[in-house]
Length: 480
Image (cartoon, rainbow, N blue to C red; front, side, top):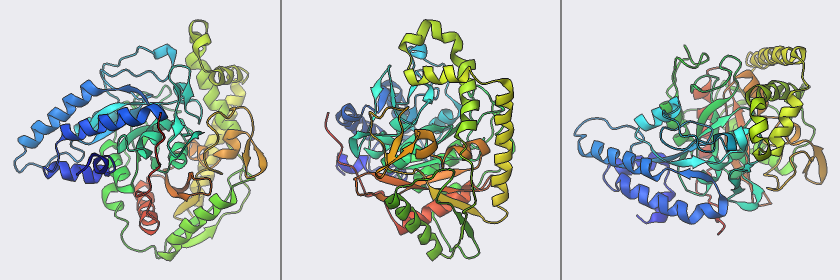
């Protein structure tokens, strides 16, 4: 096998070849690190390369292989993966892309990382995020800008944009992302990979500042549905530090990713809009083609065209209030080195009253009950992930975006109105690629399930992958 073949293997295929003795974990690591060294300068996806830890974990994987005998081996033995730099990693710098934590080295792994390590994964590095993950464009004063492998003039999306760029360019087959308003699904759609936000608490978030009011999720990102499902199977399960994680049932996600059977009797609610007025016609057509592929498997498509209030204003009140609580006491020392968009968000957060915050919290409950009631009429929901392909990498965050030749409005309200509602409600959502558009960039389609319907949305995603494969599509990675 050539090095190019190795870096293009899925995690599932790579793990099988390692277990078969066709290639060793250390050989895989050497090839991965060499590919990262060639590829990353043009994309700037990594904040920290964790070569020392990776070599230790690769050596441990080889020792496990040598002594395995007839014992079952961990599912991701020797497989490289990355972690967004908002997630703690023992002994590996974790900066949150902020000068506040520029030299922070945690002494323990986040639960999701610890579970990936126990599954045999090899951590090759920490990938980029905007400062504290505060916006959907990957840039910060600490490390600079991450660009899209399909077109370096476009954003990789955010805030898990480093994860998506690394996956799309073959720098690792798996990544742990985080998603508080679309931060896994936005960059996955921008870069043509798979991203999933599970039911709230399914993957424990043991470091969330507000455990009870939290709507940020840790989740799997990969190039295939099978790899995404395997990651979820590894990371899911309760943990004492996440109050949302207790008592959630665990499904057979790996089997669900086989996409077997038909969809006779399954109803899928289709939404073209969710509080937005504009969507790119080409993106909408591609998403509807994927919707129709599920109809061909027997699903009944139920149009949802009822009015829907854009959720961004309420999401902002909750989110920006939390930013004030977290960062206000850091401004005097670190303000000059913080991202202007984050500083502006903190100042906006100071303007909200306690009553406005409580209204936003009660709106969240009303939104949950409304969307949950939809699942009395249908089994799943389906919609575009974004209203258009990736915006320009240097777009001013506070300026309106365009969709086609029309000025649409603000980024959060108009580019990804389809994602943050399901953070506020906690429902599981997955985005998968839906082709390459005329501008040469990928787009994504999103499937949403009822609470604990994670296995079901994985199964539908696998059916889309079977009908319209995408893992053979690779960008021509730009040179630095």
